[in-house]
Length: 128
Image (cartoon, rainbow, N blue to C red; front, side, top):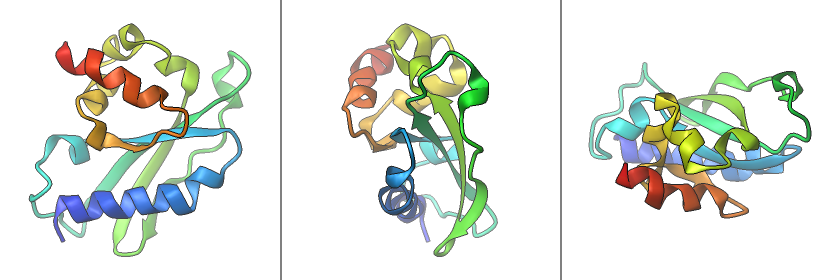
């Protein structure tokens, strides 16, 4: 299996499972899944990291649901965590966090964007 195929499995899980979660607002890839080329071999011992976006109503980080964590979906191990949508409300916020900025270099890294707000970050973040 190559990385492109593993990313496709992650996208499928988001569409089939995460998109139905309460206050789900999107999802994007993180970690090695965004830095390696799609043709790279995906080792069976590796995982695909992704961040789910939660549209929580308050300022407190404790309002985020428990992260799904690491789990197997099909032939791929996925690892999902949550971030509040408000932490992605501007390109400046994304650029100020090196853990986030790489995820918005390309729209290929966005797994789901029902409101279109994640895709709006890409042109600005990718230029920087």
